[in-house]
Length: 414
Image (cartoon, rainbow, N blue to C red; front, side, top):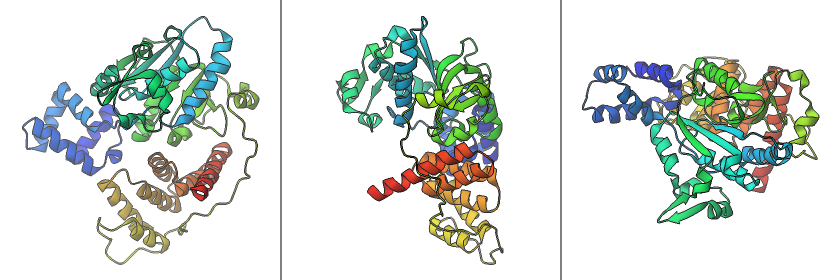
């Protein structure tokens, strides 16, 4: 029965049920069945399939809304440079049009608005459309009242300049809200924002990692339609491999989250690309990095002993992997992830095991998920670089190697 609910999630919102995990899905089912006064899962499945209102409530319960102002500062710094160095000097007669999707509870589109205001633009100079599937999150975004938790990592000066303190909340000032419009919708829908012309800048970060391959392809098609020629696209660190195509070219090979849409990639020049981002004066040479915990590259034998129970730790899985018992190690990792789908170590180790078994597609998905959960996940970054190198993506591999070096350097100075 759980499979039926997972399949329904994949069909309606594109979410890969493995991302949610059996434990979380079971919790959501208990919560919604109680709200509907139902005790039988088959009856609730029938209710879901026949009631649009209940389907919407079910979706609300599974939507992941982790966000904050200026989350991952790199994209906002790049947007600031683009506006100051390209858009404003060009003195374009029309408004700058930006899309934030999904926008969650509003922190990202409002962060974009603050970047534009800091660059000297006025609300009438731009419009930010913010799209999300959750009506609950959109209502919160429109209210624009936030707690201290939403400001982790945000400069105090910006909070003071653009918010008013009301009790225990920080309420966004009206002039920041003026240029932002919130819209209910889903990028999985091929008709989403069909009445809108393409956008000059699109932020679509940390969405594709939740989708299966089929849903991901549909969303990529929507993104391609929504980004204007020569427009910019910002994605999450774990999603860059989805856009290494002739249509989307990294503006700087060392900032892979930042792409420009081109009609013909032969017209793209590295000179123009690098001009938009500060150059790196000294680039460390590619390094041969050995994972912290060496693991056999092929399974040499099947374990004859009983596979450990879910309570066993990630350390047990590592020991099994080091002994060449990859299937047993993978089983433990999968069990751990069913219990806790935010376990970056389990995703990373499962990816290493799959890499050893030469299942590169699944390994890549695990490494991307691990990096999303823990940006400092050294082993995941290293193995992902090896996969890209194997596939001939030397630029992507170099970006990840440099990132691995930075992680090492940060670890030494911490």
